[in-house]
Amino acid sequence: MLHPFATHVGVRRLVTAAVAAPSVHNTQPWRFRLDEDASVMDLRADLDRGLPVIDPRGRALHLSCGAALFNLRLAIRVTGHRPVVTAFPDAAGEPALLASVRAVDAAMPSPGEAELYATIPHRRTNRRPFGAKRVPQVVRDELVTAAREEGAALSLPGPQTTAYLLGLIAAADAQLAADPAYRAELARWTPDRARGDGIPWYAFGPRPTGRGLPLRDFGLGAPDAGREADDFDARPQLAVLLTRGDGPPDWLRAGQALQRVLLTAARRGVSASPLSQLLDARAAGPAEPRPYGHIQAVIRLGYGRLVPGTPRRPFPEVLERV
Image (cartoon, rainbow, N blue to C red; front, side):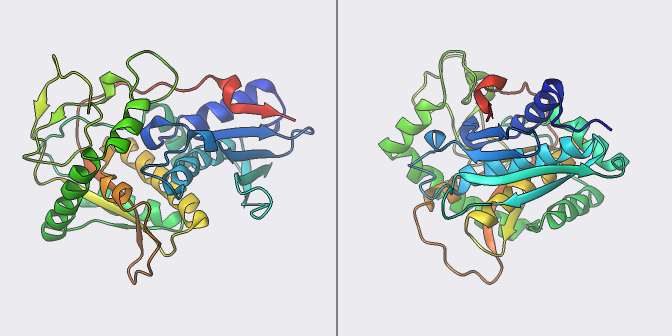
């Protein structure tokens, strides 16, 4: 079977799948490089696309790149090859080099792998209100398994823990909104003109009223004329992604786990959006030992209307050939 790196069309298909991954503020902080003999594809962090206010340690950047890495692995897998990933192959010399990926012959993908790959173009971050229907236990169990397969854990908190988390997120959201540096950083990634990155106005969702779910308001500083407001659901279903450690390898692993969870959810018709303010407000703090793991993502789950996708950078901007 033709090697997935052998042709321009094959490489473009892989990179197109990879860059469909979600990223913090849709910054798309990744670059790919194919070596001269087309045997290795490197994933590099695009550090110029970092967010120094909410992500000074690069945690969210690594999660974003991890999500792209999972999509790349899946795209290789459906060609009848197995991705062989070396994470941080030169951690001391090139810390921005996050992974090197080879593709070796393997059996054809399972139906589940093929379905996850087919879901990549349809996964969306949904910042609109969700309906009252609850995510059934069988799907919740599948999401837990998806995280575990990538070396992470997914906790599904009950009502009391959910209320506690929402209180912390609301306080963090208020803290961030009062910070001029945060508002300026957010404004850089919420463009009022068409471009290939950032969160466009149509993806903001309704303006949160502050009486319900503490969803991030991407419209801070933008005129609210014509933009609807909503309380959202005060009792959302949350999922919390955790890892044992809290360093770059854990963040890259968490990004892959997050994307497997999000694709599994989308495959089952479940909408999802992040509630990241708590992590953003604590981003500059040191990683403290935690007996139950380090939170890497808080996700809102439910059933919502279809929403459009956000833009992506052109293929030539993200791929480099040696």
